[in-house]
Length: 159
Image 1 (spheres, rainbow, N blue to C red):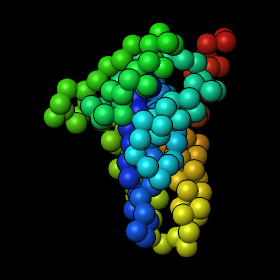
Image 2: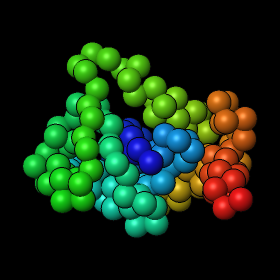
Image 3: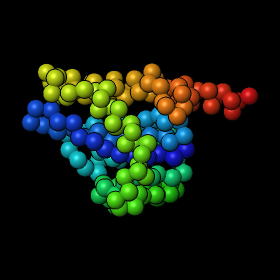
Image 4: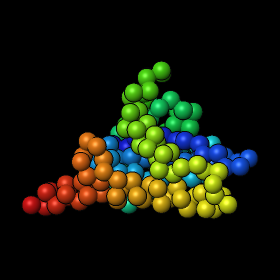
């Protein structure tokens, strides 16, 4: 299992929300994420621990070159768990194609963040959108939604 994190911003009125997700590249599932009002190392660490809370610790994490992924605290957590770190080369956005593709569709599915009456409604819709991606969205490469692919793979391992 390899995880690949990325973050985006969602503008809401005069505030920003930051979303960081960890994707299992094999199944295409979002296995961990965090939503915070600040862009910080804590955003990435929270999303990472969300991912490993219910999923096996990955062998490698591939990320872009954001400062939060290069932070001492984040790298120390990965090193303590024996996780190898891989980073994209500067100016090579296609190396993050899986997550970029997810976020392009995520923004479409989420719609205009300004339509909500409160920040809580926006956060709730972010959770719903990620859940829908994992459980009902057809992944073009897998030809099924990521949770179904994962279940099919798990059952094949038992047989």
